Length: 124
Image 1 (cartoon, rainbow, N blue to C red):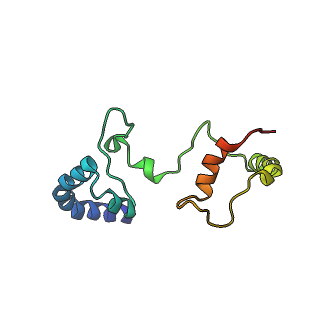
Image 2: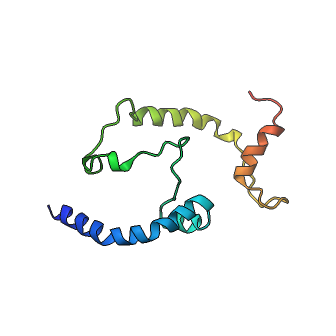
Image 3: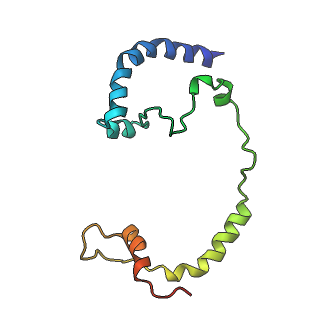
């Protein structure tokens, strides 16, 4: 009950600010200017477009966010994950990362991984 009162108070106080700043966030989403600041604050303004699957949050009941949801067809078996990782650890020696900085600026482990496939001659 107290949570509902708090949420109601937040909605009541936030609504004028949302109405005032929503045109600004439309411009942020449309132009990309200021998206970095928004992402640092934990959100990303996105325009609703028919190619993107953005849900209509106003149609989702409030109980969806407050109750634990089951995800049918999705399960993680920790024993199987550990067994798979243990079987893959046999190949850990094949991955050799450069220990020191290379002569090429910006060349790090990610770049090494992405480009090393072009230099490979044979995979056993």
